[in-house]
Amino acid sequence: MTTTCPLCESVRLGPSHPDHIAELAESWVRLGEHQGPRGWCVLVAKEHVEHLSEWAPARQAALFDDVRRVASAIRAAFPTSGRDGPPRINYECLGNVVPHVHWHVIPRHADDPRPRETVWTWPREALRGGLAPADRADLVLRLRATLERRS
Ligand SMILES: [Zn+2]
Image 1 (cartoon, rainbow, N blue to C red):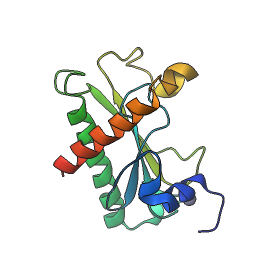
Image 2: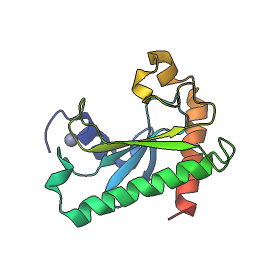
Image 3: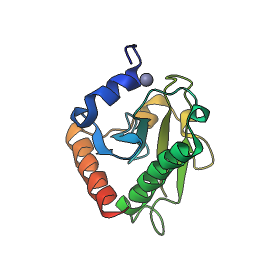
Image 4: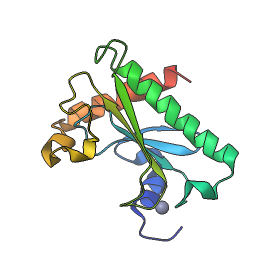
């Protein structure tokens, strides 16, 4: 699709995207820009679609299976965050800023400063987090390895 959609651009980059974690059935998995909640991942639909309801149910289910796999990998990648991984995972398919279906899969760790609120209420700096580039790269590798071990 020849638009200025930033997520179509992300799709076009495929595995060369700097935050690339994995390619799944219906999505590309990226480490989220924001890492206040460490391990925040974004799944970008491989095809530009504005409304999930435009896809047949089987395809929607396949995309949600990608989401499930990423959530499972995030929980496994942070085994000491809670009793058995982060106590909560938030799933958000918003589209308010970029109308190309994408899912935010957001771990809410045991040390979450506002566990009862959506992360979007966090101050900007807290949301962004302070991960150094090398730590981001390490996290990408850890999540990729965990995702590959779990199906
Ligand atoms: Zn798009």
